[in-house]
Image (tube, rainbow, N blue to C red; front, side, top):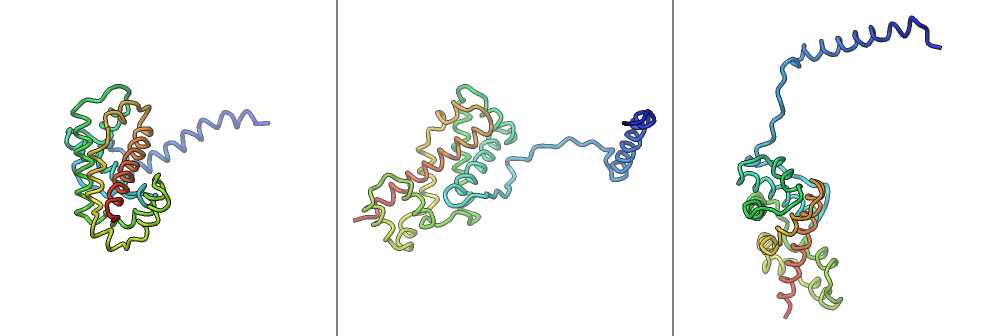
Length: 204
């Protein structure tokens, strides 16, 4: 059983511990409160992904695209994504800014050399397509050099983004996680469809 002395002494011990923590914080400059500021979406940042292949590519594309859209609108990326996550129709300005942001992201990744060659995406795109086995095998038999000479990743991505119905994607969201999930899924599928469509044109 806890003694009466122990119960009485506990608040005093707590006060001593809190004072000790505050003293350490003050000694290291913790007495100055500076609110955190959202990152400037107009400043280029490094975006990485734990995923691989087309999923990793589209994840980076969406994150950079949201930055670009927020920059165009003059707000933080956090404020923009929170706004998009609200239910209801999207404005023309929001839709246009997001599409432009995604296209800007393609150009940025092309400039910094982070776009993979199109041949690195072929197998994944074909495996998720509804092409018959004969066509899939014929395309996979093409040398990587032939595919990369005929198709450019930035061109495939641009076609995919131009074909996205962003307004529909953005009108049925539940929260910010749903925004990321829906955008990634839509962009990924659009990239696969655009890639497969272009690959079919390489066959005689």
